[in-house]
Amino acid sequence: MKHPTAPRPGLLRRLLQRPSARLSLFLLACVFLSAVFLPLTLKYQSQLTSSSAFLAPNTEHLFGTDLNGRDVLARTLQGARISLLVGCAGALVSLCIGTSVGLLAGYAGGRLDALLMRLVDVLYAVPRLILIILLEFLLDPWLQKSLASLQDGRWVGYSKIAILIVALGCIEWLTMARIIRGQVLSLKTLPFIDAAQALGQSHFKILTRHLLPNLAGVIVVYLTLTVPAVMLDESFLSFLGLGVQAPQASWGTLLSDGAQALNPVRSHWWLLVFPATAMSLTLIALNFLGDALRDALAE
Amino acid sequence: MLIFLARRLSAMFGVLFCVITLTFLLLRAAPGGPFTRERKMPAAIELQLLAKYHLDGSLWQQYSEYISDLLHGDLRLSTKYRDRSVRELLAQSLPVSALLGGSAFILATLGGVLLGCLAAVRHRTTADALSTLLSLALISVPTFVTGPLLVLLFALYLGWFPVGGWHSLSSLILPAVTLAGPACATIARITRTSLLETLQAPYLRTARAKGVSASRVLFVHALKTALLPVVSYLGPLAAQLLTGSIVVESIFNLPGTGSFFVNAILNRDVFLLGGVVIVYCALLVLMNLAVDFAYTLLDPRIQLEA
Image 1: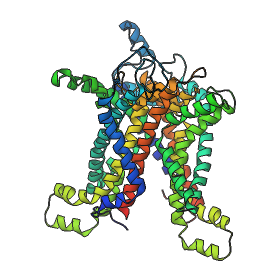
Image 2: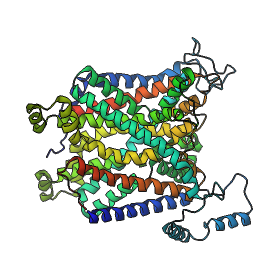
Image 3: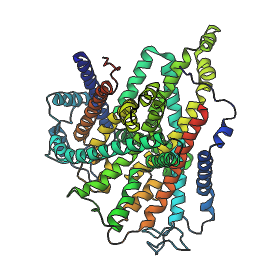
């Protein structure tokens, strides 16, 4: 049986030897940098309305304008900011929960393990959408209140985004927990854990100093794969109108606007095609990177 | 065999019970009730309504009454679509979702296995790279992007299929393709990995050495073993596809079950949500059971263990 090990040195070099990884990293860097810096240089702000609605792409508005005469390029970049933020932060939340549950279940074993894994089974059986929406409702009043008390309520507008991050993070950890638990079960049988226990090290030390470093590879791979999963969930909720609220916009909201603007009489294709391309490229790049990372680790 | 079935079915009721409890309690704990409107209704009327739908009394009372009704086979009335029973609503919408999901399931399985075989047989060639790229792209791009794009191209621009609605067989094609896309890609990826591993096995070399034709080695000898991981993915996939997808049903304007999952929560329609969750969970467990039986058919070495 193959036991998980700490990543060998030179992981980055091995990763960069793969053309698909180089291309993905380049694409992601482009998306990230343009989402952060490009809006500062644009003539039109993402929330600036004008009387020129539904302009097709031209030199003034590269991606055209929408129903309210807003510049679609600026909106797409604004959407990128929010989608990337929710994706990365949500993946981090799920990483914390999934790793802790997996470590605990695998290391403690016995009843606690059985209990936690049955919980994971039941949560798998409930349709994910239902859990996310219910969590949103339950968290909403509490987060609104705590954000309102923070710095004179400057952050209240962001409460929906915060809720999305927490709720999606609380749902996406199931696979991570299962995988980490499996790895811990196999690591636990190795002599070095026995040695650490015989030396009288505390459980906490064994978990953080001996088990966690050996799991780093698996964790990094699943983190890279969780980011697109959370982004997909976020855009899905926003598409249904349950995610980011107007006037803020994520890629999901833009796509839902775009899908509604399709009709047999006149289709405003630019509303759909540009956000769809941006989002698809980002998600494909993230998934490719995760795959390449897994292969590089296995080498 | 019988003991195996009995144990699995009792486990199914355990899972069903947990899931129903969880959804019931969570939905009742969520702020707002099924009769909360923007204009507040008089307290007396709201109490009457709550009593009519058995939503008065303590939470424990509501819950135990609901469970006992369920055990008697009564799914109760929907609180949103007044005077229509959950059973009736499901009976109307499930056939639509099941037909759509069933065709998507067949499309995804056939397409995915073929694509995966192609990639594995032509390992490290352009065909392999292209099919890997295609499947990763299909996994990454959500159905609410592919759906509208397909509508834009095939319904609005080329005019081959209707834009939406539920009229004829041709209105089934675009939604089924949209729904099948990501599943097809996942199946292709699993098939490719598993087949690559299987093709190394000595028994296949023996078969080739004995002069069995290449296509027979691939499709009969190798694929039978390689399909095991695919089959275990197909179980949950079938449950998911057959109970409908809100995105595809809303894009193509189909009267299926998918929208109930979301709308029942938004309307705090506890019993409708309970109904769709029961259908979904029962399907999930039954499909997993079917997966176990398929295992023993594909690989006689595998025994059913309770």
